[in-house]
Structures are given as structure tokens and as C-alpha cells.
Length: 515
Image (cartoon, rainbow, N blue to C red; front, side, top):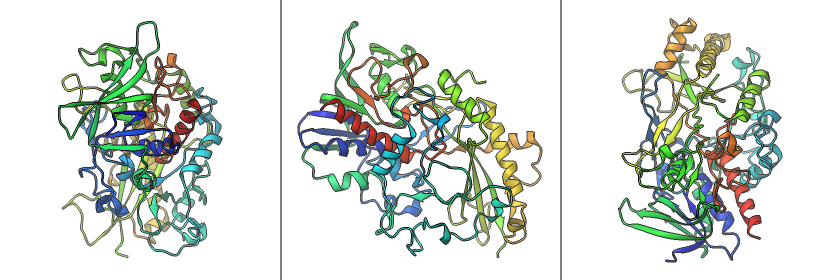
């Protein structure tokens, strides 16, 4: 096996495999992917879409525990993360939701990321997605029918409160009530991941090497105090062993290890804030933004039964400007509501009657003002990073969720819910009414809605950015990052579609750089 490749990609997840396959389209280029997890291509738990909740805790979930959350009853919160070829695309809820298109949220116009505008995102959304022929008319009971005429009267209760029905998901407008597309193959009715869609058809490529159970421990550099650092390779271990191997990068190293692991690899390699760099490792580049600006969406649930019938942690002025725009723009989306049917195995054993029908509403803060961090653990640098979610570090997030609870309480009191469906609230109970009681309930019961971003933000260096608009890590010439960690502010969407778009655009940027 060759130990030298043109491009070495750390992380074979949602972005990593998509990027690898696109780079390998050039037959003259050689590509190596290092993935810490295993190959779960034939795993039935992964393939069956309906298993998306029961899969948490399975071997392909490399989840992490947070530190005790000071503003959420000092609770430790679990953070599921895909671990295996395909990354979180083999574990997530399969939702294909695009970032909103309105200008205040443009990475380019507000955050200064040249070339990262809504038109560019649409281009790469389309490149990474397809709607198979006949899907607008398909009658299958197992596949989403995007034709609005086929959806029935589900949104009636919401319409009674003035929430419009949005018939077209993916058009850049995420407001209103609308059905989300899912990453499901309509022919096999199985999950579509970066492993199945990108890697599987290209496994036989002679210029593409994927090494599973390979955990990167550090990036090697050629550098001096007066020169830009040049990444020359990656050191990794195999099968949880201690023996180290090295793969040489002739052109570039690209980090696609995800929001928690990408800053960990950077800090283990000497890039970041000195106080977080592993003891005994020389600081190569001072980048205080590494591992900071973590944004993790928080959510609360309203469980119902049916009848048997100024935030000092936000340091980037550009990010503050975006958040100010969201607060002042009545068209900006602050909350997300998801209705989940009773068949999803979310109900705690023994607490509910299995003969009854249940539903819950997930109430999600789409634009969190709170900020957390992800850094290496000094006691175990190669182990799990220390993740502080910073939940409710800014009370605005708590206020927004409280308003969401009150909205759902109004929703389930509508005649179409209360009388026609016999819906009644369970948790929080009807006795929890005052703002303070609702907030206290949220502090005790809120948890993560996943979707971590921001720990290697694409921002100006002086605003605690880590990469520039070409995804190059500041202070290096050939180390790039292409995963959710570069997203500087949250996007009012489940991020999988955006991460695919980032990988697709990254591939074009890299190809152009080496023409």
C-alpha cells in the first residue's frame, strides 16, 4: 500500500467521502481517506430509515458527553455523532433541508466569505442532490410525495394560528409548514449516505484509497518562524492501537473530521490557542478561534396524547451583525417545530400506556446566541475532546424556547387539535403556565438537537476565524478544512445538505488551485 498521495483527507464522513470522490474524478490525482470508524455499508440498522432513533448508542455512533451545563441544571448532555464511513449521514434523521437564501444570512455579504453566496449554494445543492423521475407523482406508502396536492390537511391547525403552508421545500424559504425531503433511495427504500451515494459506486477507483479504523493523531508540517507552514502528511493509528503510521501528502491535507474532532486534530498538531495545545507540542500557528464559537442547537419537546380515535462569547463583529439582522427582520426564522408521530420509539419505558397514541413537537432554536467550545482534553489529548455546549449561556435562547412552548400550547388548543383529534398536553403539563415555570421546565428538560457547527469558522482571522474563503487554514499554504466546523453562524436548516454543498464547492476550489 502506498504511503504517499496527492490529497490526504482526515475523516470519511458526510463531507469527507463526497470530497474524496470528486477529487478522484481526476484520474491523475491520488486520494487517501483516513476514517476512525468502520465500514457499515451492509449494516441493516444503518440501511433501514426507520431506525434513525434506535441507532443512537450503536457502534457507529461516536457520541460525546458534554461538560455539566451550568445554565441547564448542571446536566451532562449526550451528543450523538456518526462514526464510520458516511459519518453522521449514516446516523442522522435523514432530513434534506437547505439553508435559507435571504441576504442577511449570506456568508458573502455579511460575513465576508467571498464566493459563498446563495447562488453558489444553490449550484452545489443541485450538484449533490437529485429527485428521481416520477417522485412528484409516486404512490408508494414509504416515500415522501413532494406534490402538495397529495399531502392532505395536516397543517390545518397551524393555519388557524396564521402559519402559512409552504408547498416547496428547498426553495430558500424555510418559513411556514412544509414536509421535508429525506435522503432515501426510492427503489430500495434505504438510507442514502455519503458512503452509499458517493463512495459505493467509486470503490473500485485505483486512485482512491479509503482506510477505515484509522484515527489521525496529528498533521505534520514543514515550517519555520518566518515562513507559512506546509502540511506534509498525517500521522495515524490503526484499530485503536498505539503503533503510529504516516501517510505523506504531496499536495494538500484536508480536515473533514467534524465540528468536535477537527479542532482536536488542529490542537494536537500545534494550531490554536496555546493554552489548549497539547503539552510537549510546539505551537506552530496562533489561532485563538480554533475550538471556539461552537453553536449547538437546543430543543425542548411538547408531548401530547391523542384520543384513541448581549453575549460576550460571540466575539466576531460580523456574527453579531448577522444575529442583529435576525432579531430585527420579521422574515427571519427563529424557531423550528417538528411533529413526530407516535411510532417513533421516543417514549420512556413504563411512563406511557402502549395502547395510547402519542405525538411530540420538537421546538428548536434555529439561531442560537449561546456559544460553547470543543478542545482537547489535557489528560487524554487523543481521547474524546472536552465539549462545553454553552446551552443557555445567553438567556435569549431560553426566551425563544419559552415562546415556542407557548405557541405549541396555543396550537394544541385549536379546535382541530383539541376537539377533532382529542389532543391533550402531557409534558410540560397544563399546570406549567407562567413564563418562569416554563423556563425552569426548559432548563431541566432541554437537550441537544444535534447540528454542531462553528469551531473552525470561515471568518476573517482578526474576528477569530480559522479558515479563509478558500478554506485554507490561516498561517498554512495547503491545509484546508471542509466540514460543518467552518460554518460561522447557524443556517436555519438541518446541515446535511449544506455540508454536502461545502464538500462539492471545496472540490472545485481545490481542483482549480492545482490546474
